[in-house]
Image (cartoon, rainbow, N blue to C red; front, side):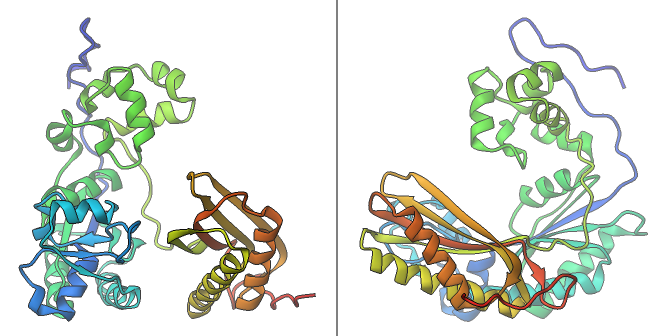
Length: 372
């Protein structure tokens, strides 16, 4: 392949297409509109309707929406007030995390039964190591059909030489997509898209690139790695240089244990009464402890998150010599941290976190500390 050409005088980057792919093969599986799909299984009368899954409140955000609602511009993480303006006829359904976890377990158990190495990233998506498999496309076709047959849920699949390309491919033709791409095909498909399309490039980096005249992946590929390092630092710069060339060697890890878990809530009306805040923090702590108990996990670091009315966000934490899983103890420690901080203004959001998680029966597991 001819070497990549240099940036032109007008600032537009010319072809910097990646080299041929290695032998590696990775799949990415993503359930289509997962929370909404689970709700439609429980409420078949809503099929074909615009449905938004979200809590009802002035500060609520959309968890997910059916494709009928998405056609009106409704998207995940959008303020519910905006979603309702865009799609006033949408039906609001409150989220049921227990139902989603149960559906996720059903899907992922099928995936693990068919594929040896699976890295589950969330309730509804996972990476699959397919390298060395005789017929990976046929295998994933069978997997998709089995998931549909046994759970009635639709999934989209992407296959590529890396996790990066596989994820982009699975997102490309939802719902029920099945897209196979190598690096060169990925380049041809997305070179003229904004850099923010690439997983890992967040809004802040995307804005920084746009401010420097870099509006497409093709233009980003034309920037010298030294220049990127000067702009974004010695680690992010080279990473961006590889990312825009769809160069990714991140392994598919069969076990991805969470290192922390949290529970938080955003109040409809800002709270400033200490008793109310402590009561809510205790409730969240008990919910968190119940979830970790169901997982058979304990943690050593208790933390809180407090977001004030002006969006100032403060975190406080305390690390213990031994792991704990007792809800009352988590609550006492969390409330103690809240009292030490003493929010100087009304509180918009409150959360509690337990980090340094380990299995109860795993190495280093300890009994809960007494309150004294």
